Image (tube, rainbow, N blue to C red):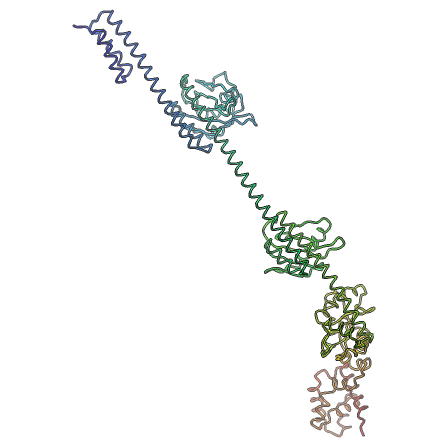
Length: 636
């Protein structure tokens, strides 16, 4: 048999290398030669060729594996380059690490230098929730040691490995995950360790140096990607904070501009003599919502937009808050109401109440407080103007009451300025307050009331006198008594006189009104008003004009007219009825008429004078009127 030569044997091994045969196939040429009885020298040569071929085969395998690893690292670098957020980066790293090292589990922890630990951030292949929440103090366990020292460590049987400082909490999590062999390598950025990358198996298996190097290469890429992601996150945060700061600055600038414009507009209101309603309109246009302007008594002076009226409990709460604010300034919130005080250093004049759900910033509150200041100024200016006008009108009325209406040009000019008209009838009222402490407020109320009615008012000693357009003094007196008393919260008694059509008749009308008020007070008719005519015979006694005809007409007018038109004897029947002590039979006997006729005549009287004509007070006035009628036209 021909033995194979050395050249032939080398060709066989080269052929095996070329087709990447398995290592076991390299034994076949040697076994064939030995079976063929090849000499020892040739068998030795074949063994040498086989070993050389196996070395080349191993080198080729290592080279291929290294090329695959390099390709995987390049792919990972490409993947990481396209990711910006930390979690996707960590997920890509652990997934690639697990595949390249053919491990059961791969995971990564990141260092928390502030708390001195490295925290689990991402896993691939994990089944334990406790393991995924693991926090490892620096220096404890394999991961803590790698994170602390910056050196790679591995263990074939971690749970029983004495080279690590074991913690029950950590070991329990590792046991729950069923990990046996663990390899951990540091993730470095420069000299700083930022975390640890791990590969682990659930069976005992040693990690080779090549695997440690490969995992270290993955960790280097991971560290750079994590650091870049953190830098990017910090940049994004900084940009977001910068944008937020820009928005705040922009909003603040807008608020400053809005406040400046509101200030200019409210200053213009003062210059041109605007009112509280103008301030309310500016505030709600700038701040939104609805605004109420209240005076010190809780009365609404102005409201903007479709403002819902404030409830009584809201008003009392607002005034209480306004009084508290006055001592320290500022704006307070109560529910959906923003409240600030309208005040001077000496007194609270009222409050501004803004209703709105929106939160008011500092500048918006300054706008509301500026509006309160402007409102206080307008109220003081208007109060000063009102006081001056009231003083002017009061002095004019004093002159008229004292009979100084001399018809001079200056007096006519004063009368024209206040708007009194020569061809309009006026009534004179004398108002008396029960309590002297209300006299000042009564004078202020009367001045405002008279000015609105185009009349005059003046305070004289213990009374308030008003000269008002009208021709019904009694009705006007009752109206003033009711409204002034309601405003003061105290009884007011008002006597009326007039109408006067010549201002020269004002003094006489004033004396009659004053006498009428004295009569009402004497009759204890507080919180009421009347004129002399309405007081009946009392008015006849106190009236300046002693209007007997007027008293007769107001008391017996309908009966007198009936007799005059029909020639009847109702007045005589009525007089006889009262003179006989209201006896029907005696009346019929004295007048020589039938009893039924008396009944019929008195029934007619009732229809003419009203059902109450026999009431004591009314009957007295009728009897006085009958006596006055007899005196004016005595019977023959």
